[in-house]
Image (tube, rainbow, N blue to C red; front, top):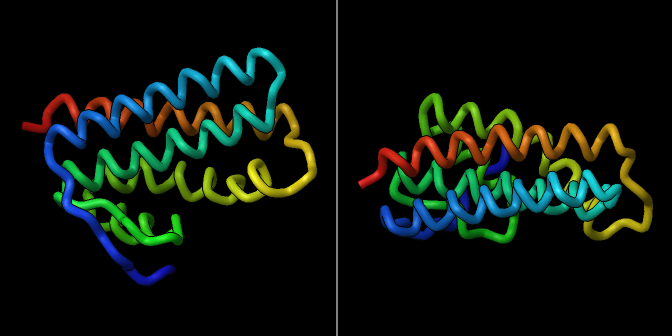
Length: 135
């Protein structure tokens, strides 16, 4: 598992903003999937997961990962209780697709993109739930 890296403090207002971004990315990912744009759907799904993690870590720990390695957020999610564990399961799988979707020339299979969108939706649901209780 990666070592924890740099972090930045997160306010309650920022928690809600990250949750809203997660939701927007998840909805956009679903739209791209429906249009048959699997690469875009997968990329947007990963960003939904990342923003969900920032919302959950911000709400539960008061900070988010700020390093260049997205895997560092997995360390924080492990410290963020049941909500963190819930997001971590899906985000771990989404991060495995990020490089393929965004930087490699190959395509993304429709079934892989569909699973990515499902994971993004679950992450965004957790982020929305956590943000709703953050003051």
